[in-house]
Image 1 (cartoon, rainbow, N blue to C red):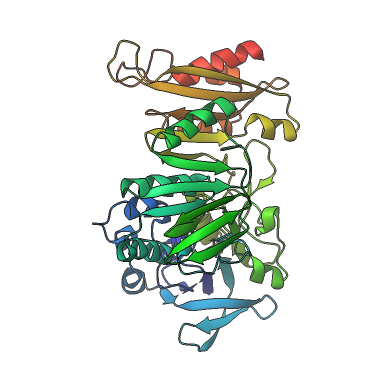
Image 2: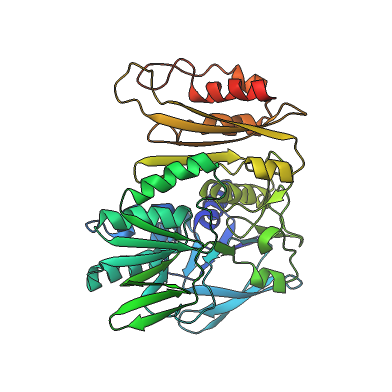
Length: 446
């Protein structure tokens, strides 16, 4: 049996490795368009912040390990361009310009997502870059080193933009950030978003929300970003306005697309075409709160999806429950986390939603080092269900968000969650954990 995988990062290599463990005699071929496989893309901003670290430190497992130890036919520099579902073939072009074609019995599309690059003048200039692949990380790191960069303009204010903002400030680089929408972190509770905004600005970052970029142009050795009445100058521009799923050639093969043009899959990760699966940032998922399709590209789902596809290819039926959209990121001294739905999303999905926002402490009140934690919790008045949680604080946020995430997967009510037996010791939490305080306050409103 021939199992062909398009894409060699999280979903693709997880599927390849598990398939070989499940069925050692299975022929597994991986087609990866770049020369890099199996690396920690999420670690790139932190690596860029440390000039002494090689970017290749982020490689989890080198290509030769997959080839020599696991007998995976891993082909780097092979760009898949066409899927023929009728004849069960994948064709494309290698880096050397040679045409190739592989037949498959089972196919996994794990092509990931690409950064959105506005179709505007100047976005093709060499000093305008995005951060998605390991090669992107190499280019950014090398450009900073070779050009003695002192000022960077970041387009966008989302996860990656804010992580890169912190990384570049660690290198003493000045930062301007621009976004077209007027609200900073619009998905986050307003009061909490202001806490994050203040932390960013206190680290000498200039924020310009509500500004639409018209063009980027050269100005001597520098770049000028023109936004109507505002013009900013810098040595480099980083584009971090979002990503889009790499699904075009799947669509051309007659494979059904879903949310945001991601590839539509069922709970087994199977597409609308028999024997073809999709996983990772190119594929959609079911949301555990709404039960409906969503597209939230995150690392854990990609790895878990790869495992599920491998199991299904090898005859072990595996279905995934779905995702809650659990995520966390660090920006300067703050941890910012969320799981499930915010108030606006919950209302849009038809829930009779209400929220509470509490401000409490990360440790017992008399314990040294305690800091503020803000918690927003959303529930459904009609069913009593917990729908979502957001948190911001200097400590105790990143791992605390996992408790409500588990509750969402188990469709717990706010009342049941409020009775959870959570751990307590003065260095780690008040007696009433911030999660429990928020749940108790939300119960009063429900």
